[in-house]
Image (cartoon, rainbow, N blue to C red):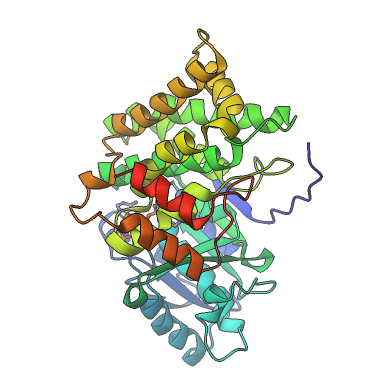
Length: 386
Ligand code: NZQ
Ligand code: ZN
């Protein structure tokens, strides 16, 4: 196991009916900006629960943060923060609203002229404007981590940012929020969380027994609950296990002491930036070809995953490893997610080269746990996913 430091200061408040605790979690002496998305919270009762809990607070609202939070929209929110002297933010939404709020947390205290530099120059944030979250969509783990991904349509860029100053102070995770999620978003949530585990687990053996077992446990739990949450989002047992699995997949614990990959995400972000394909779906497109391309380096761990998660015990290491990739692709397909780029767009010819260009422009020239996925290799991975 590698040496590590663990710092996860977010207070997680989990369970049905817990949104009312906002009343005491949000500081009463601070002016609050409540941020949300395109309006789903106004149709499913979450907005009412939040405003009821905050009726004695001073709250300004900012709605309209899109899926794949858009830089231009966030600049408008930044103006509100400055004009209204906002001291605390509350994100009510999925990964997009929470990520947008993290960007604002950083940008509000940023002293440079151009807040885009936080993303373009990968400036880490050590102190941000404090914020909490009410999670409405289990998927990203953003409710308990310090990362954020922001999109900019005009330049077709999608870039990450983060730093120890960007953990939510608290997050309320009420599993009943999934009742109103469209099937597409439930499927996305499962696939995203699943891939988060894979990015931190599917590398090479590192003698981190507990991290491996926790990762395999999250994967097995996601496989177990996926058909249940898709069939009946009112199933509280399935919903609560779904939500906690998504949080645990990316709250920092399973990445400690082990090598991590993240190349699937970095390459897949280009597909959202160029085609607007949902984040989770881009992962399902890229993951199978990434693992096929890096088969030699990953085969030992793939075989372990085949045995422990899918109970595939017959055959050589190579046989098991190949079966594992196929089983993973089939799992995504079982969620109703298509796993080839050509199933989403007709305009895919030449896209591999574009991805290579974009990764080079953003300095992402050495991806993967061995830092050997160059832009050229990334282009091949994309081409294998056509
Ligand atoms: O905008 P509204 O109207 O609220 O509708 C949203 C949105 O259209 C809807 N929704 C959310 N909760 C709902 C609901 N509809 C009905 N009932 C509810 N309870 O769902 C749609 C998608 O929401 P979004 O927040 O975009 O989804 P998700 O949570 O999957 O977030 C995706 C974003 O997170 C980033 C992705 O790149 C993408 O931009 N990621 C963030 C990460 C992180 N911070 O750690 C890691 C991930 O790998 C990922 O990159
Ligand atoms: Zn993801």
